[in-house]
Amino acid sequence: MKSIILKFLLVLCALTNSALAQEILNKSREQMYFSQYVAPDADQHLKDTGSNEQSRVFFRKVSGAELNRGAELVIDAEKAVIQISPLDRSENGRRLVNAEIPRGMTLSNGIERRRVDDDSIALHRKSQGLRENFPDLYGRAHVMRVPENMGRGKFTLQASGNAKADAEYIVYVLDKHSDIALEVQTPARRFARSGNLVLDARPRGNAAVSLESVSTTLIAPDGKRYAVAGQMTTNGYRVNWPIKVASPSVPGELWRVEVRSTLRNARKEPIERVAVIAADIFAKTAQVSQIGSSAQDLKLSVDVQQAGRYEARVLVFGRDTAGAYKPVLLAYQADWLDAGLREMQIPIDQARLAASGLRGPYQVRNIQFLDQGRMSVLEYLDGSWILQ
Image 1 (tube, rainbow, N blue to C red):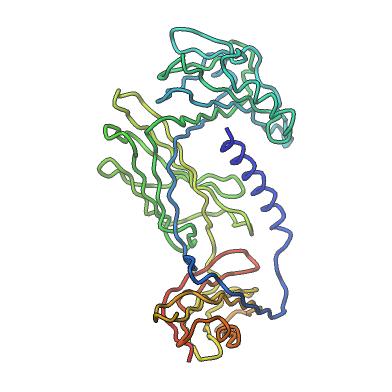
Image 2: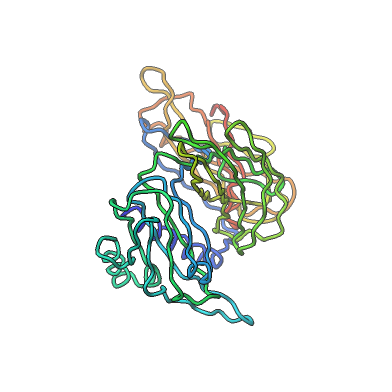
């Protein structure tokens, strides 16, 4: 339950921060530099490590008419958590708020039917408390847990005529005790509009599980959805899709990659899993073309396509008494660059290096290059640039 609360809080923070990000486009022409020590014994790097999501979750949109008839949910393990939330809709350009959870909903396993406000569905009381204490987050959600003695398998969540037929809801299921997950891996968290979206998906857990179907959708900050083509492999799925999107990127706001799948468990039941990964779909507004180093600084030759404020971060390594290289200093430089071939000079604080306890020859091994104004990481560069 705590993890569910945390996820919703993170979503709220992300939405708040993204709204603010649109107001803080950095157009300053001032040159800025600073540096800081890093912990030499910690794993320090400036890299896009990609993502690895293992999902035991599925969710889908249902209409009030469907909920009245009964929405079927196949649950792989006992004590799954179910949440239902109403969705707002638009009519003639006006937003119509739907704040009502249908009264008298029931949950059936095909043998018995219980009201979702039954004491045995323990999270009802907790969801009531959440609504009272966090009305902005939970004021329109009802959370329930499938009682252990109702088992697992096929369930029906039904409103029996109490939902408005044209209303819409999201039904979210956390099958947290299942050993079946959909694993989605990406080599990066950021993808250039001129490049390809790459990911791999496969079932994890029970050896008998098989992947029956899968689809991927890229969702822009403006809500527009793009169908992403992929190919099935041996019990897996791969995407290497040329990115062709019309929606604008919003500074500070991430896109979503939604992977929906149907898996077959050992009992040949269809098990849904949905994985969602955040991604930065960015425009390649500038690119580092050449790198040079001296004892005092690192110089980046930059091909700037669009004028703006850019930032470079470099991670400096030095040698310990045994001769092993360890991270010592992180240096930052930000400057306005006009379109064309430009240069960024990142000073390296020699006094800090000398006082660090590590010795030379010092090396820059990682570089991160950012479009500060549009809030995108443009490149991660690895190498060994000696400062001498």
